[in-house]
Image 1: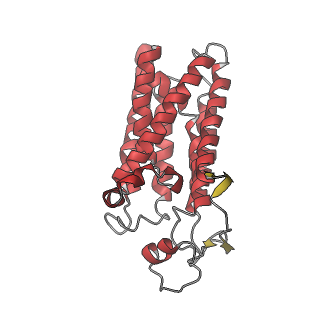
Image 2: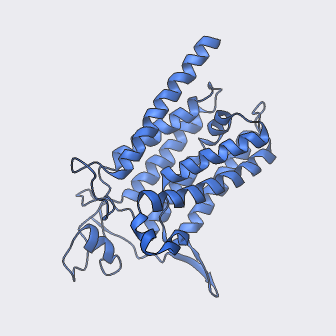
Image 3: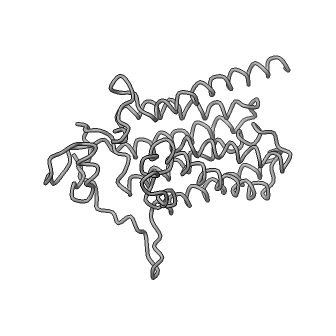
Length: 280
């Protein structure tokens, strides 16, 4: 059993300006994805130029930030938005939805394709191997913020969390008595997601996309990988206190939002290889 380390969520401050680890992790994701995109664009016959990758970063950033935040407040934090409309602006406190960010990025790719004469799936197939960099970095940011914990667990790497620091976690989610000093050992769900949605998914997609694939195949594999990993991890992740389990004492909002992704991925893979067979 481990104890969650005391990490200051502020990376550094300059006067009244505070730079948070959470925001820095998003910067790592964007810069890392941009660099890998340039590496891939530099390959012969990639069909992409470094300048297009630079422009792509701008579109992706808008899609992730706007879609991710809007998705979070609509899917998970609508009650908070009603109480405090300005909460939608407090991104540094956490609260970004992957599913909302995905919708934002898809819209951004459609706009990007129109401007650069790129097919929609040509753009999504190109960025799919780059997205796990941001996903992994974002989950590290969640860990530093001390949010999105898993439920109680007996694994050796489970972590106790200070109830004095994380009052909402202990009282609202775990419903521990007032005055409890430490939580029971919890699954570090954020690190599970950083490993599977970040490292493992990156390796799968990067290796798979290193060779020419039919249109939609890489995008479909991305949706399948994320869908499987996220659905499985939700079994140990504690649901939001105000939502709880939506059915069967185990079904979460994350799983419901992930199912359409998984099904869409299967459809895209099927269409990709069916079209290749018909045109081959």
